[in-house]
Each structure stands twice: as structure tokens, then as C-alpha cells.
Length: 522
Ligand code: ATP
Ligand code: MG
Image (cartoon, rainbow, N blue to C red; front, side, top):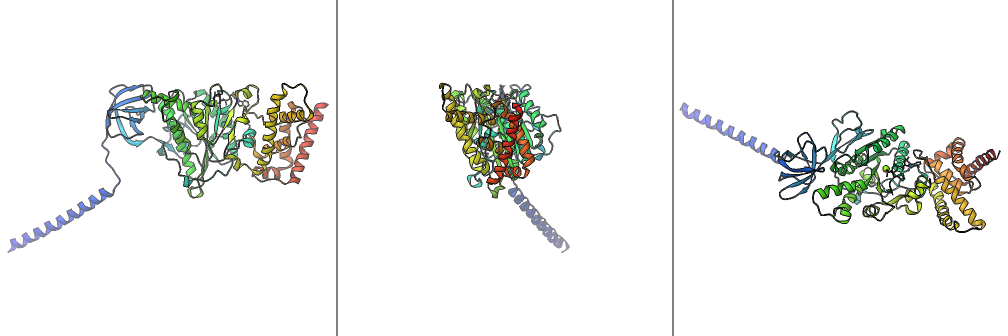
């Protein structure tokens, strides 16, 4: 009797235990099913060939395109060529320690870069390596370097100006926040100076700047960093560098990484500016990689997707609508031409991708007309709409006077006698050209630019000897700033002045100029 009861008890306990076990198993199974954890067995492959900044690898059958692979010693590579029995990898670091037979591991993550406020004021490379000798970046967020461009529905028209502080650009080729404007010219024509001045000019705005140096000499990059530091511009900037000594893989990924860093700030509703100095060298790095990876060469030996690598980069620059935070990313890519040939393959690609170009002419540079911007060959397709009304009022007359003058100047070289009107137009044009000259690292606030351009448009400088225009401008700025601080503030804020206020300002200008002429006559 007793044994029958204990048997029953045992059976019941077993049933309860079984039930408990089943419940636990079901819960565990559900937890595993609903979790997003995927088990990645660590995959390893073997290097077949390494050289020129690329490696070919056997094994790693499950690798995906753009996945990071890691070599012994921490050197990283990105898988870009996936073939049935081998993969092609571009190296992001030194390949000295690597050789055929080295083991390589797939990391399971996409090529990424650090982002965040901690990057401001720093000089880094695309992988986040610190190059300024400062503290190593710790516990910063990382994001993939390749991001999809914002959808059309999330974009909004370009409405606010991005002031460069350079008179010729702000008046005649205005740039808007969210625009892509190409800076193009032969070597040593002042391309870098134009963009560096633009960064310096943002010290009075809240624009975050990213200077991305691709394939340049270390000394040239050091000079830019020094200039930014001298003008306190480094604190709101990030410098991302891949020098000419870095492997082509690093040079290739750098602009994408720099754009991801800028997008972090844009996402937070900030206005950002990115400079790619320069994309000719970026295209060359990609050609180098593609030829080494035996991709079929096309025009000028560039691979077939050379247009796509630049368009997918520049498509990421835009102005987002209010629902997406209202931030913007303005891109100023630089391109170097040879013998002024803007119809070469890479320049034509980029001219068609961007919203306009600032053309720097070696002829003007050698004549000392700096910045050497050729107004006739330069255009800005969207920035005009963002120009302050007061600026727009002066720029129309300025453009007309300048183009008439350029035409007449060529013609006047052959004519011995000129009628009075022609002579006056030429003299006026010469003053306009003189006023458009500007030293580097001296960007001007909008108010100062508008006042001097208004004065030259009104013909007030026409009687002034040409060599005095520069010093007259400096004196004018000082006097107007002291006498009309309220008007200057208004102009700076994008407001227009009424006619009576302009009359007073121009009278004051006239006064300064007369005194200057008198003092030189004495
Ligand atoms: P590279 O092709 O080597 O990159 P670049 O086109 O970027 O050259 P910069 O390095 O900007 O040209 O300028 C070339 C030289 O011209 C520099 O020595 C610079 O100081 C000088 N320069 C540029 N702009 C001006 C200016 N507005 N006033 C005076 N000097 C200038
Ligand atoms: Mg340069």
C-alpha cells in the first residue's frame, strides 16, 4: 500500500519536473528565436599575394563586400573584389609585415569610422588613428563609412548662404548651405587657399568644417593645419588625412569616412561644410587599386565605375528638411586640371555631378590677380537664390561692369584711340577688378563686402589712382565700421538698408576718398 503511494508521488514529481523542463525549454527557444544575435563562426583565410596596397586572399567563403578583414598586427583591409576562389582586399595600413601564407580573419563588420564631438579640433585618419600626437580617441561611436544618400523626400531646397568671406565668390558665385560647388584649376593656382579661407570665415558662424586631405604631401597638410590653428579655426574643424605615403586603400576610403563624420553633426541639425582636397588624387587611388585587382580599365585607364564612386559621395551633401532636423552638408570638392583642360575625364564627371564650379586660372594667378577666380568660367547654379537681397543688389551691376570691361580690355589693346565712354568703362572695370582682389587668410564679413562693392558700383572709386584702391578699401572699412555700426550689423544679418542710409554711407565714403586723394597730392 505504502509502496504504491510512494510510486504515485514519484510519478507526480517526475511529471511536474518534466513540465518545468518543457516550460524552460520553450522560454529558452523563444528567447533564442527572438534575439538578433547571430553566431558568426570566426572565419580565417590565407594571403596568396600582397603588394602595392592590396592583398589577394583564399578562403573566407562567407565574406561580404566592404567587410573588414584583420591581419596579424592589427592591420585592417576592406574586401572589395569577391571572386569564386579568391577575394581582393585593399589594405588600410602598412603591408610590410604581411606575406603570402599569412592568416587573415574576417571581422563580420563593415568598414567604419569614429564620429562625435570628441573629433572636433583633431587630426585623424579614416580609421580613427590620431595623427596630432594628442590623446587616443576612446569610447567613441563608430559608424559605417558608406551611407545611403538622404532620400529626395527628406531634402529641402537650399535657402541659406554659406559665406566664404571672399568678395569674388560671395558676390558673383554665391554658395548656399547644402550645395556642392567644385573648385577647379591647374596646380598652384590657389585652390587650397580659397577653401581654407572659407573655413576661417566660419569662425563667426556655427558651421562645423571638415577638411579632408587626400594624397597630398605631408608638408602641405601641415601648412593647412597650422593656418587653421593660427586663426582659431581648428576648434570647430576636423582634419581627416590620407597622405601620399599612405596605401591607396586608405586614400580611397578617406572622403567617405570624412562624410560620415560630417553627417553625424548634420543629423543633429547642424550646418556642416566638407572639403575634399582633392578628388583627382582620390580617382587616381581608385585607378591604382582597380588595376592591381585586375579590373578592366576604361577611358584613361580608370575603371568603369569611376563616375559612380564620386556621385555616391557627393549625393550625400544636401540640406535636410525640418522633419529631419534641418541640418545641411555643403561640399567643396577640389579638382586639379592639367594645362587648363577642364574637358578631361574626371573634371567633366565632377562638373556634371556638382551644382557649379569656381574656376581658378593660372593666367590670372601669374598676373597677380588673386584670388585667381575666372568669373566668366565660374558658375553657381543654386546659391544665387540664397544671396542676401543687399548683396544681390550690388552683384548684378558688378557682373555687368566686369564682363563689359573684360570684353573691352581685349579689344582696347588693338585700338589706339578710344572714345570717352569706352575709356570710362575700362577705367571703371579696372577699379572693379582691383576691388575684387583679396589677400589670402583675410576673409571679410558680408557688411564690409557689400559696402565696398556698393561704393565701386556707384563709381566713387573711378577717380582714385589704381594703386590706391587697396589702401582706400582698408580705410573705408575702418571708418564705416566706426560711424555706422548699426547699419553694418543690419547688413551682416542679411537685412537691406534704405536709400537715405545708403546716401549717408556713400557720403562718408566720398569724404574718406577725397581726403586720401588730397593727402597723396600734397
Ligand atoms: P596645389 O596644386 O599645389 O595644391 P593650390 O592650387 O592648392 O596648389 P595654394 O597652395 O592654395 O594653391 O596656393 C598657391 C600659392 O599661392 C601659395 O603660396 C599661396 O600662398 C598663394 N596664394 C593663393 N591665394 C592667394 C591670395 N589670394 N593672395 C596671395 N597669395 C595667394
Ligand atoms: Mg592645394
